[in-house]
Length: 135
Image (cartoon, rainbow, N blue to C red; front, side, top):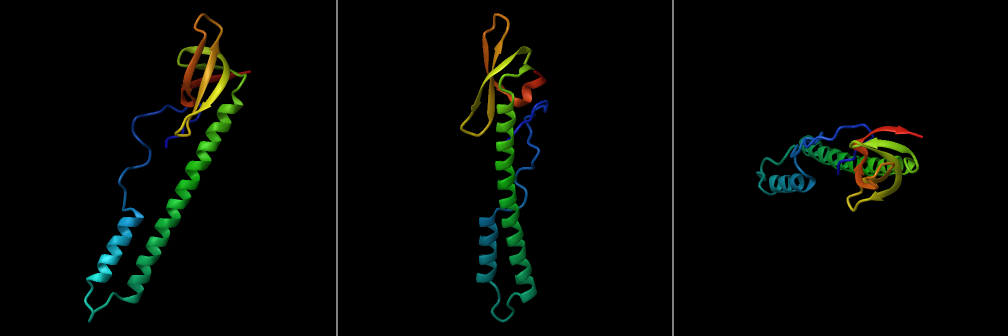
């Protein structure tokens, strides 16, 4: 999930490279296949096997850290959006007061801005679209 902050320009490309390395399931399948087809007269060296287990452990820890960071960023973006309630913002050529914050099913925060002109309320404004905040 992509989380945007105020003033950050969104792009269609992800900052995280896709298809980097292998998943935990793929790693386990590879390890089990290696063990299944190893030569019984020349088994895998203990140090090599321990190194592979350490790699798997590091992969699992990195995945947990990544999940935790994504959760933290989502919460932070929601708090930032809620902090804008009642503030005057400029976003997408619309200027007005943030009247509501909506959290989508994917966890993204979207603002509703009540403009002072004849536009009424502009909905579904992303945090990254906000260019200026005043009281």
